[in-house]
Length: 343
Image 1 (cartoon, one colour):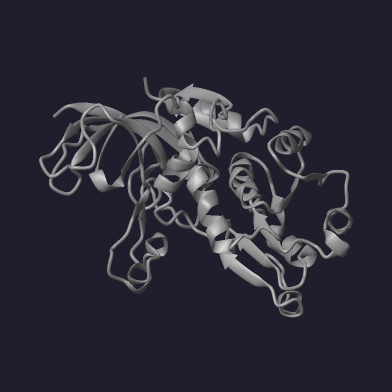
Image 2: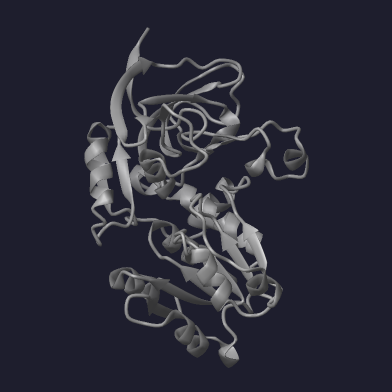
C-alpha cells in the first residue's frame, strides 16, 4: 500500500508527523485529491491547545483544504482529473430535523473534516465529488484557502440578516474578521471595526471599514456612541474575537433591538445577565461553519466583488507544522493568515 504523511494532534499540545496509507477512491468517497495547501484556522489552534470543545483525539486536523484531483471513481461526475478544488468540510446525515430544515451545518450527527473525522493536513484525501468546488483561475493555492473563511463570513451575515441600514460592529479583524469585513461591506451597511492591533485596524479602513476603534487606548462604548446615529449603538455586532468576555461586551454596547452573532467555541464561563438581553430585546444568534456557501464565495471572487489575492501572510511547509503553530502562538503582529503548503 502506498504511504503518505499527515499532521496529527495526538492530544492537546502534542503534534506529530505520522505515516499512513494513501486512500483510494470508492463509490462514496469517489475523488482522490492531492492536497496543495491548507490554512491554519483559529479552531485548528484551539484543537492543538485543547480549547476546542468539539474536537476528538487523536486527529488529523485541517479544514481549509485546497488541492488537485488526481484520481476519480466511475461515480464521480462533478470534477475530473486535473481540476483544482477546495473541499467542503461539512458531512451531514441528511435526515435529522436540522438537515430536513436545510441546516446541515448543524446536523445532529455532524462530522467536520479535521474536527470529528480526519481532515486536510495530509498529502491525499478521498472525498465525495459533491464536496469539491472548482477554484477560480489565477487564484494561488495559498490564497484559495481563504475561500473557506469567506464562507464562514457569508454564513454569519446570512444568519444576521444584514441590511443596508444596519450599523455593524465587527469585533476582531484578524483572519476571520477581515473576511467578515469583505462580505459585510457588500451590504452597504456602515461598518465599525475594533481590535487591539493598530496595523489590522488600518488595513480594515483601507479595505472599506468606515471607522476603527483601538481597544487598547480607546473606550469601546464611547466610540460606538460617536460613530453610530444618535449614539444608538450597533444594530448588528459580529464576534470575530471569540474571547471569554466578548459576548458580554457586545451585549453591553449593542443598540436596542440589535442582533449579536457569536461564533466562538470556548467553554470558559462568561458573565451575562438576563436584563442585558431582555431589556434591549436582543437577538443572540449562533453561526456555525457554513451552509453550502462555497459556490457563492467562489462566484463573488470570479465577479471581482471580493479579492483574496496575496491576502495570506505566511507559508510553512507542512513538515514544519510545529514551527507554524509555534509562530502563531508568538502572536507576531504581522500574522494575518498562516498556510501550510504540500509541494
